[in-house]
Image (cartoon, rainbow, N blue to C red):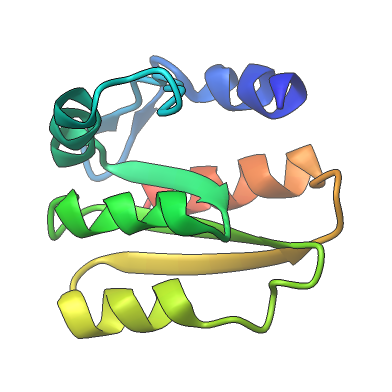
Length: 118
């Protein structure tokens, strides 16, 4: 969604404590070869996406990475990716935002900013 992308781009270049710098890079995995998708997963620190198969890419993320799952249109009670993160590693931060479609962009922005600042 373009509105979400525009809002999250506001994080780009900001600095946080502990020392972190945000570099926002939206990716359309529908057009990337699988090898490039996985290479991108490995360097991703925060992944945000709706509940669905695309979040399986989180298994390739580093242990310090953060996953934000959007529970949209009735998928809020499904715990596939929450359980996956618990089973895979205990260090990775996980957050589910249950929301109606369209997502409250400001709420999402605030949650991403909060997680990056942890």
